[in-house]
Each structure stands twice: as structure tokens, then as C-alpha cells.
Length: 115
Image 1 (spheres, rainbow, N blue to C red):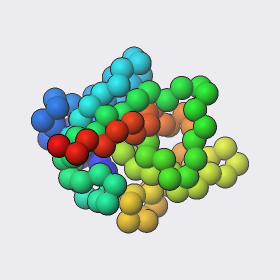
Image 2 (cartoon, one colour):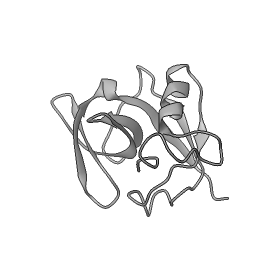
Image 3 (cartoon, rainbow, N blue to C red):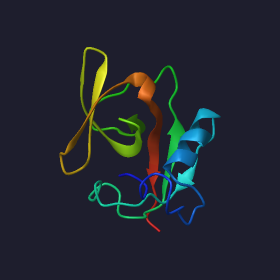
């Protein structure tokens, strides 16, 4: 789920994915409404979500939803697979975005709000 081309469409919660990544890097747990349909079934278009920063102790596994930078674009997508220290990122529909290192992940999905 990309947030309206990364820079456009600041969500009702006042934050886009770039701003959320910046907040996560400073230890905050941002709440935002990301735009897009790539995570339908997990996160609806503009549904409010809360993320938490990734810690050194976190074990990343397939199925987790993460805020990650893939090929220069911030995405809120799933980890599809892990191999040799790399993570394959994909949306809820199965489209693969590419392999990244753990360092590309800045946050984990903490909560999908039902309001």
C-alpha cells in the first residue's frame, strides 16, 4: 500500500508514509490512513492504522505487515518470504515488490483500527 505516490494525499491523521517513516525512526508510533487498494483484505483504503518502530530484538517473519522502502518507494506491505537474511515484500494480492534487507524495514503494523 503506497500512500498516493509517497508525497501526495496526506491522510486524515495528518501523516503520509514518508512522515510515518520519519516518526518511526525517532521512536514514535504513528497513526495514519494510507491510501491504496493493494492491501485490501488486511487494510482497507484509508483505514486508520498504527505502526510501531522496529527494534533490534524483533524477529521478522512471513505474513507480518511492515513499513519498508523498496526501490525508493515507501510501502506498507507484507513480508512474503525470508531467505539468506533478505525479505521478499509483497502486497495482499500476491504481487511481489522485491527483496530488501532488514535495514529497509522501519516499522511494524501494530493495529488496524475498525473506525
